[in-house]
Image (cartoon, rainbow, N blue to C red; front, top):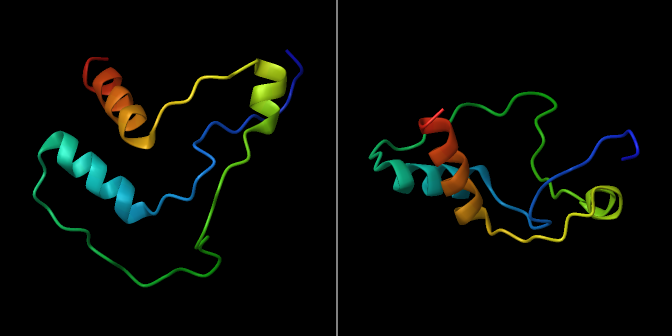
Length: 79
């Protein structure tokens, strides 16, 4: 494997609100988000390019955001 930085993601923009909603639903949390003022330098949009991971790590699997978060929460809660 060639040394480097490899992004792992869906290659689709996902908002923090969407991630919050998925996690809240999976954990049955009823809290609502607490919005604060935007900080200087805050990244407003992001979409990971996973081409290097595909090329050098030979990753061809696709997992949707909900399934990925569900599996991550399961791993974390059972760690």
